[in-house]
Amino acid sequence: MTGLEDESMNEQRYLALMARDARFDGLFFAGVTSTGIYCRPVCRVRTPKRENCRFFSQPAQAEGAGFRPCLRCRPELAPRGHPINREVESRVWSMQDASSILAGQAADLIDRYENWNGATPSMQQLAQRLGVSDRHLRRIFEARFGVSPLQYLQTRRLLSAKQFLTDTTLPVSEVARLSGFASVRSFNTAFAQHYALNPSQLRRSHAAGGSSRADPGLNLKLAYRPPYDVPAMLQFFASRSVAGTEQVTLLPGHRSISKTVSVEICQQHYSGWLVARFDAVGHRLELRLSDSLRPVLPALLARVRSLLDLDADPLAINSLLHASFPQGDGLRVPGSLDGFELAVRAVLGQQITVAAARTLTTRLVQAFGEPIQTPIDGLNRLFPRAAALANASPDALGRLGIVKQRQAAIQALARAVLTQGLQLHAGADVQATMSALQALPGIGDWTAQYIAMRALRWPDAFPAGDVALHRALGLQNSKHSAKEAELKSKAWQPWRSYAVIRAWQELAT
Image (cartoon, rainbow, N blue to C red; front, side, top):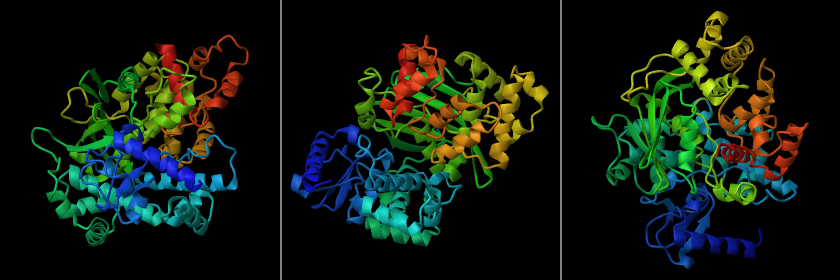
């Protein structure tokens, strides 16, 4: 950008800061030179003077410039940005654009470090995943963000620690481990250097959320950017809810989703429950989860953000899709807490109605899901693990009403997850995973695209052969409906997953 473009953008940011515009939450942060603090645009403190403001697109940039996070608006709660560089979406890509996008992809992988089998990624792992040298990655990353990948990761760890210290009563030693620090000593040192106070001082300055006998479990907060059509999102889950594993409440003032949870990291299996309740006034999600899930707290928070698409950027998406889908500005792409579960449910839903798929899934859960005790009436089953389905007999699956073709697909999928390391989570390599999925029996393009859209969180998935999509787009009578849908979708790239959800919603209403 030129200096004039930078100044114009900063003026827009200052206007958003003055208005406390939640649409920009997490898209920029304001450092105040008179206080040494950086804030989210939604911060409720008195708006600083324009000449005292410096603007940053990432918390790591603000901290690299010597600013500390605000204790009131809590930058760690802000929804995360998207790796797609919005500045280059509408332009022909140049070499500089490609480098910027690559740096954004690296940042996204760091943001999703919770999915790296419980460990934080090294520079070599990041570079290998992106197909470049670690030296080249470091160079383009610093050129794009003004900080090194390690500085970026350190900020992410410290902000996670700040959230756990503020929202919970977890011991400092456990906070250090969950945030990715090798020792309490290194954590205390890094925290004091960055924030000019130690973890215990931060905790004393806040009344931690914690747990109580009357309200069991851990309580945390997450934020999202408006507009967000909460009823539509919860209705999507409600129409597909499986008895024993999930419940949806659609009452005004108490819109929530409750689920049983199974998480496996480093060959360790953890199970429990969670309740996610929307606070539309504060654009927040109030999350309560069982104490048994403490060891996988960072991974679980990442999965909840994926489940409810909390990190979506409506400004960028709507700028491209509003003209085609004017009623869908608040719609999000529903995700999943468990990619394997989503993939199995996608197979069960092939070429049948949503209600029929829910019936089959309920039978599968009752037959192969492990029982679990929760404080929530009706939540008493976990979704079947990959090992249980891989070892199930065809007769047992057949008695549930699952036809042989889908039996083979489910068991091939389960074995691929168990033995081939098939990754079905946000941050996985999309093209490689889709190729691996379509190499399995009974999984074609529609199923792979659907899994990519909801489990891999790929914003540009497009199941061109979907019959309901054809009807929504007015192509049901065409001899080449899939091809025509694909051509029509080019105008919606790179947000075709959101276009699909909007088209389905228009058809439903």
